[in-house]
Image (cartoon, rainbow, N blue to C red; front, side, top):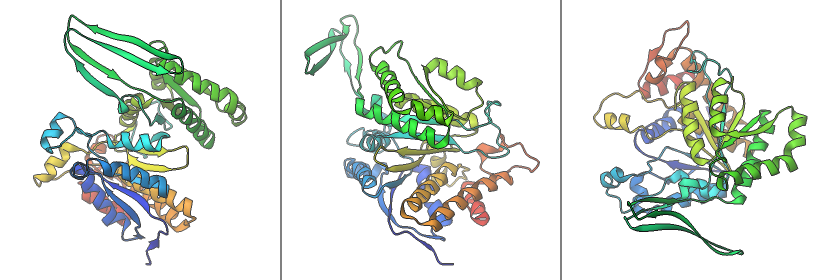
Length: 399
C-alpha cells in the first residue's frame, strides 16, 4: 500500500531511558510502515541537552509555535544524583516546564478507558479530565539556602513604589527559601482554555486551589476565574447545561472520590501534576493517560503523562526482559498525527490515528497486555502478559 503523506511536519522531541527505546519501536513498527513520517526532530535526551546547554529545549518549543503541533517523549528532569550520573554542568530545568512556559496554555489529561480494566475507585464510570495550568509556580521558581543569622525578604517594586515583606528571620536556625510567580495573563488564558474545552466536550468544570491559606496568590486565581466566567461564559454554560464551580483543593479531593467522573478538574500547575498521576493510577495505570498542552494561540503538544521508567531501563541495559506499558506514548503519537491531519485537511492521516488507537485498545480487550495491567484485567478472556516489543507487535498485527 502507498504510505500516507504529510505535507507539513510535526515537531518530534525525543527523550530519555526506557521511553526513548519505546519511542523508536513505535515509530518503526506502528507508524513508518503506513505513514511517510514528516517531522522536525529535536533530541531532548539529557546528553544532548547538556551538549547544547539546554538550548535545544527552547528551540523545540519555538518550532511548535511555527508548525502548530508537537509530540514529546518523556524526559529526565535532573536532580543531584542525575548531575553526577550524567556529569552535567548544571542541574537543568524541567524540559516540560520550559516548553510550557514558552507555549503557555493548559495541559489536559484524561484516562484511556478499556473494557476489562476496572478503576480502583469503583464509582468512576466516566473519565475525569485533568486541566493543569502549564505556566509558573514552582516550575519557574528561584530558591536558596539561608545560613543561621540570616533573613529572607520579599521585595516588590511596581507603580505603587517599593515594598519589603519579611519572609522569615533565620536568627535561630538556618533554612531554605523559595520564590515563585505567575501572571494575570497566563491565569486568564488558563481559565479561558478550561471554559472553551468544557463547552466543546459539554462537561462541568471544577476549579480548586487553597485560597484560605494563600490569600493573595491562590485567591488571585479564584478571582480571575470567577470574573472571566461571569463576564464571558456564564450564559454559554447555562445554555449548554453545564456548570462551573470553585472549591478548596481538599474539598475537591473528597468530592472527586465520591463522584462518578465525567467532568473537568482544573488545578494549578503543581496540584495538576500530582492529582493527574493519582487519577491516572486510580483508573488503572500511569501509562494509560493522554496528555496534550493546548496554547491560547492554537498550538498543541502531545506527550505521555508519565516519566522515563528508569527502573525498566536499567533492566533493559542488562539485557533483561521488560514489560513497559507504551500505550500513553502511542496515544501521544496518534493525538499529534490526528491534529496534524485535522489542521492540514488530511483525512487519511486522521483515519490512521483513529485506527491506531482502536487497534491498541482492542489488543488489550482481547487479553494481550503489559505486566502492569494483568492484575487489573477482569474479563471472560484470560490475560496474557507480553514484553514491551511483543505488545507493540501484537498491536501492529491488529492494526
